Amino acid sequence: MNVKVLAILVVVLSIGRLSHACSCAPAHPQTTFCSSDVAIRCIITSPKLTSPERDLWGNLVYFKVRQLVIIKGVNLIQEVQEVYTGSRLSCGYNPGDYFQNREFLLFGKVHNKKNSIFLYRCSFLKLWKELTWFQQTSIMGNYQSGCNCEISLCMKGMCFNRTVPHECQFTDDVVPWTGPGKDPYFRPQYEGMVCRRQSNGSCGWDSRITPVRSFEWR
View 1 (tube, rainbow, N blue to C red):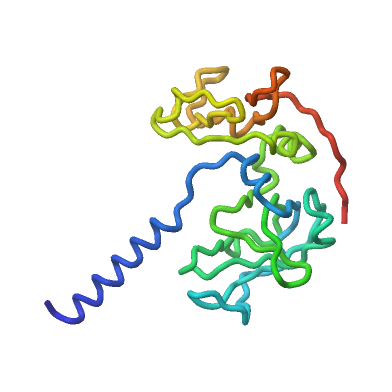
View 2 (cartoon, rainbow, N blue to C red):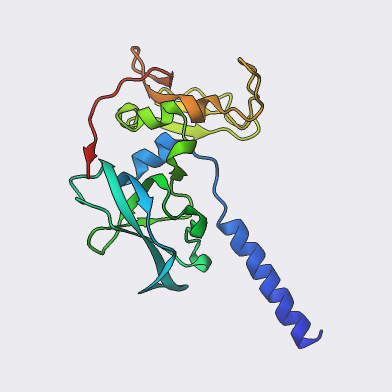
């Protein structure tokens, strides 16, 4: 085989493997909130910048943010000013220039640099205005109240026969919505429910709003 052709095939196969490796399974916002160190509302104020820090695949990248409110992790960090992520080859997150000067809800891990957090490909980063009212309100306490429960992802009916007291089955992607409006893209659990302890001690889906804490504005 021609050496150039072989080299091209290697590159194509590597990109294919990278794309597959960097894909993320569907996750409920509560899952990412509970597994994160820090949750903030912020505005991205810079384009993607290159950091001198490196991982195994190359230089880290970061972008600057203006923190509006810290929701979780105030005991770990007072004010987030920079958000770091890996290079493309290490499945870093690239919000793109389109997201500059827009308001986001972001869940991340504490980074080793002062006033910064780290964001992975599958971390939660969503435009604030695109969140539902329930999601915006649930960061005040709903998601935290369910962190002693687990949310199991159901794919093609593989978990419907499970009955585990401390789990809720995340079925949005396998059970079509048949409620008001019958919008095929509506995801009731993702957009309007939290998994938390019920009166009988087991975990179940709940659509009630019960805020238990206040924000710390910056």
